Amino acid sequence: MRKALGMIEAVGLTTAIAALDAASKAADITLVGYDKVIGVAKSVSVTIHIAGEVAAVNAAIEAGIEAGNKVGTIVSSKTIARPHEEIDFLINEFKSNLKEKKSKKEVNKISKKKEGSKEE
Image: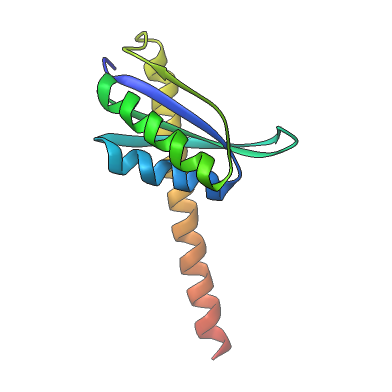
């Protein structure tokens, strides 16, 4: 990856979603993953991971921080410009985790639909 990796750590899901929305609207970036961690700032934090060109990621991070702080608390943020090639492994893990989370949600939706049709 010769692009940049950006991270925004927010307290709470709502704050993270507001930050991601603003970041996505501010620049051409891609969500490559997210993590939920219990215990950051005595709460649940959500860290979003974005990728794109260095200037785009910087602009997106700034917009995300501003929007997130209007809703809740942004704990930290970081842009890594042109990360080392070894970081590609981590980025690919983020992407695969995101895909797994999406597929699990789809399976749950299908299961709920089947259960709903059985009850009728």
